[in-house]
Image 1: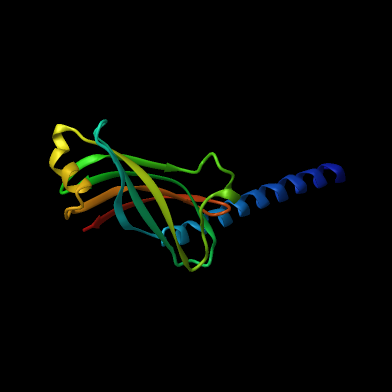
Image 2: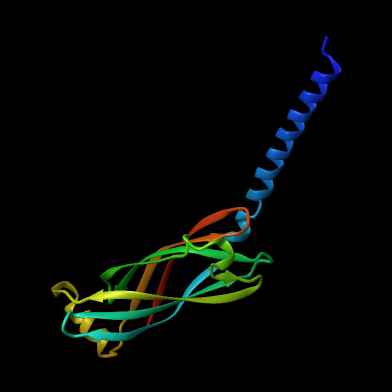
Amino acid sequence: MLSKGRIVILACFAGLGAMFLFFILYANSFQGDLEKVAIHVDSIKVLDENKLNKRAHIDVIFNFVNPTPITLTVSTINYELFANGNKLGEGHLSTEDIPEAGRPILFAKNNATLPNTFDLVNSESIANEYSAIVNNQPVKYEIKGQATIQSFLTAVTKDFDVTLG
């Protein structure tokens, strides 16, 4: 026969297990909302060019649209930048080393822009695209990548493929 003390201890552990299970189910219930966030690129423009080193800095402006009633943050953006079908390179924006309260905020039912500087290096394989970009000629851009979007309880990695121009 179980004593009253053992029954109390077993009831406490059962309650703790039920609370833990509820927390996991509650945290995962927001993942559907996180998938609704849309990722766009507003503009791509040349910031500066270093002709000596054959490099240019390009400003890539991401626009995140949050249609959900939850305030979210963006912790990483990893992307590949293409111009006229040729790969220019890879870009990365990370705020993982910043506490969540200091990261870029996607307010509920609002949008936010996040700039990222892309380091473009001229090479033989992209010489035509490099010339067109730094001379402000028409270029068709494609940006493929992933962004990690977080709520206070969960995170989702969202794929995106955006064209511009």
